Length: 109
Length: 123
Image (cartoon, rainbow over all chains, first blue to last red):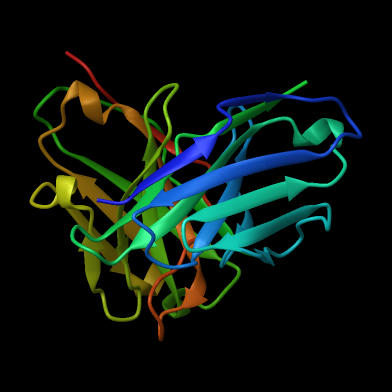
């Protein structure tokens, strides 16, 4: 079964700084990785899909890159509203068919 | 704009069943997959399954097979998720989410989310 491992578990930064979040996929299946942001008490929000495509309405400071086993979400200059938990996700067609999420990275001030 | 409105919180006894609804609006209902994703208190996200609103076809995560069903009523643009044999481990917020891609291709990921429905199983 595919496992998505996110690092770091917690990232402490300040507004204006650059954030780099990682997601490692094992075994590597495809490049259809998505990234989500979730704030307390809210539903997740899609940021990036297909590794690098920004979802509708997502600011340009959010970007995604990667292929194979290594994927990265970058927030170029943190805004106060960006402090949240971030999840990566991938679909697996291998048995068992599943949509797997990473365990999350908490981005805190 | 796309809107997914879910039914209210449910408290069930262990062993019971629960049926959660998700009413879609703001787009062509039959054009996009609907998934269900759940989140236990303080935990991460877990995919439950999807339904193709056009065909009624479904696909479930292996751990839920035999215990979950998803249906839709196209006349009222609503999908339903029923989970049977509830245990305390099923206590979670259940989200319906609309896929980013059309049903003519394989489902991809979760573009639009409902507000969530808390399902609690407790004696």
